[in-house]
Image 1 (cartoon, rainbow, N blue to C red):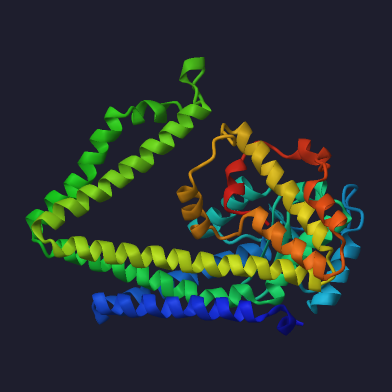
Image 2: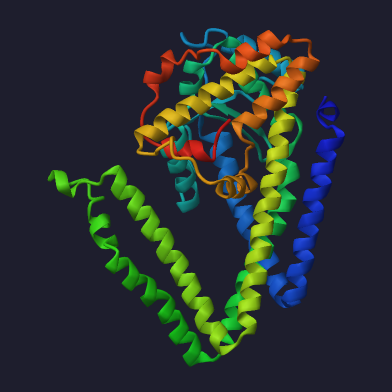
Length: 412
């Protein structure tokens, strides 16, 4: 079945992505030193193995399994069985999971394991979301809160999308690329540190202190400390509590001070050795290229999984309305968190954000799905209705306010 999931455009996206990855590796080798690249490759390989082991344990062993059906999802078992049959995966081996942690299951202890479990609890458990990961044993997840707002056809479409990621082996395909990118980033970071250290002990020390002191002074003058104090949950006074405006300001100050630290560091060392500015720009450019390359392949895989969902028997228009529901809830919850959805970013900002996004915009996915629906024989009236109809969000009251920000980068 997997071979039917790949069209010429999918092979083209893979070829482009790995050609760019090879270029990044070659450029990193050219501007750096073999010893640095070798050390970075060894370090990132070991770090990646540790990360994979931790994620593998948590996702394969610690998640709660969904029941066969719920009052708000009476056909869950039937839908899942149909998708297992179509995809060729084993229902006995690979049950459907929630994002929540099952505390009754044995859990390995350690910083990495706890961090993964905490991230799942805080950012994903109660939010409408679905995902799939394959680190040796496929794990397909969908949150109860998403099941609550989807009808049977939408539920099947969303789950079919996640099954498609597994059938197309996206996790396996992505791993070598991510490993090379991590090695390149580490090598470039080490190269920059070596370059600044080569200016001498005194210069390196003064430059490091300037990198810390300048942003610290800027943060103090900007009121960063006062905002941090407002984060204390024990604050009782109304003026002492953190507001949404305070959070936005705190975020802007933190980002600005971080950027100021980088500028200070590069400017100081470049004044001593102009070559350092070139090294910084080269390594920053390679890092940015790696991110864009990964994001480009990820967006291609999302389109591929949408098409794969239809191959597994999903209704393309049901996936359209499911995406609209998720996007609508994102808009509502972000507004509750203080985000002004009426204020649109500039075209340049949107283009830059889309270039780095791991998922295509909902509008673009709906456009592709509409084309698939036409090819499948759906009439324009049905397609228009799916794209414009009033959505049933009666289950929205079950969705808590917390972790709304997680929607921004993790949708379906």
